[in-house]
Image 1 (cartoon, rainbow, N blue to C red):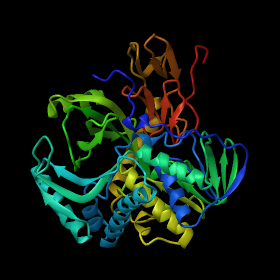
Image 2: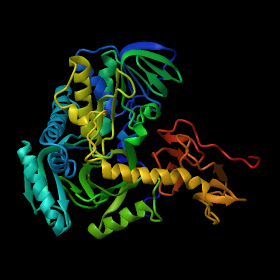
Image 3: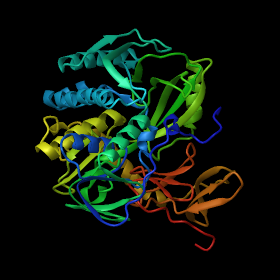
Length: 498
């Protein structure tokens, strides 16, 4: 692989505000758990609608999680979602989804203009394409459905991609931006207006009117869970409704210019969007290889990206490479709104299905309306308590079978292999399964390869040098420390005496 340093996103060059942890209990009108894009926007929209006493907490730093690993597309075009919703659910559901996401694109533009935020915001068109003749009719149908819903959509086969397509649908006047520049500006606005934001403050549990943290309890009228994967998942059974996927991105220099954003209509297909580097030179953010977290195969996904990039762009080289983790729902629609299974005044925003930027704004608009006005005209389609399973059944059955198998994986024999330096895997230690990582100097780190969330097996991710849960997507570093939830406790470490 041409990239020699640790994978890290281009956005992380931005210096975010350094904040302090909560020190003791406090109270607020609204407490928001999660200080990523969604949490910050929820606070911003609540502030616009009259709620001032707001507390935001995060277990890490501001926007230190999935927001920093996005491709940062701002678009209402989410694959072939509109035909799927219209035919599989209802015209009303498709209309609400379109309205919420079209509003989200508009709100980004309005906020950036009103607050004069310098965040590389660029208006462009967004395309979903296919190279398969058999899929071209579905792409054409998506264009027609989007037009019926009032979206400025057109069907075409002429694109700027480095290969020909059999069909493509274009949504006009979408956008892309630098997410951390935008988030940094929103954070400053909130702090200057009296919002209290605390880093390194982990929520452990929540009930009506209270969030329990490792730094003190927070009492509030409303609780918003904007933690990517909800930390309240066990009591509310949210783990049965969402699963997590990883995808991989390379920021390519030398690939030429690109004006618009593109996505293959097939899962795991190519994604493209333009971005200027720190010197103002053109890059293309090139993504591919979606897979369920913890289900890596033998390929190295970064090497695969480089090989595909070299095939498409003769002189391209990766300036940055990173991976993203996304919460997915079985019907392709996020869960946004009051979640009665968790509590009367607990709101959640999760399952953004790889469209985190637009969905964050849609969630902030909907939830802030529900809190300040008692409801939102676009809330029904996103309801966390929705009962319509027509679009969920196939995915739910597939994931249920997969999870059932992975609960038992840690009971089966491990691989009998010798690890080289800088390799990891589950090995057999006198009939016992042990998760082992051997660093570049030969030092060994051993853990029990069982996720502390619900007891599923973890698998070694050689792209990131992490242990990833095969069921619900928790991630741990090679020492077993938690990198991402829903797990809250580290993996059990194994010593010579264990």
